Length: 65
Image 1 (cartoon, rainbow, N blue to C red):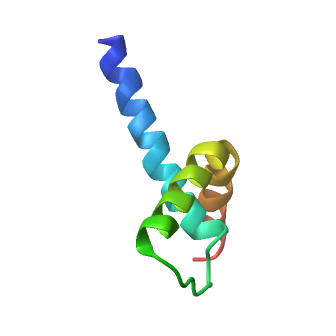
Image 2: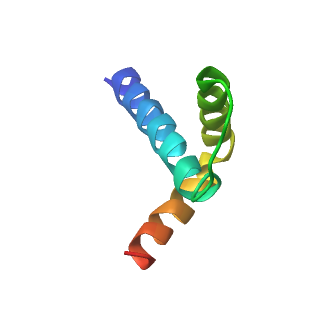
């Protein structure tokens, strides 16, 4: 049961990290390049800095409605 729960938490962290990179770092920017490279950059940034970017993105969404 703990393995399933930790897996769900990791998937949620990765998804929220990917979303938060789009809301903070890449907000209001036009990005040109191969889609695979852009996707993997967002994925890596979200994974590495999600612990900072997720709260910032949530606060940003709540303030700038």
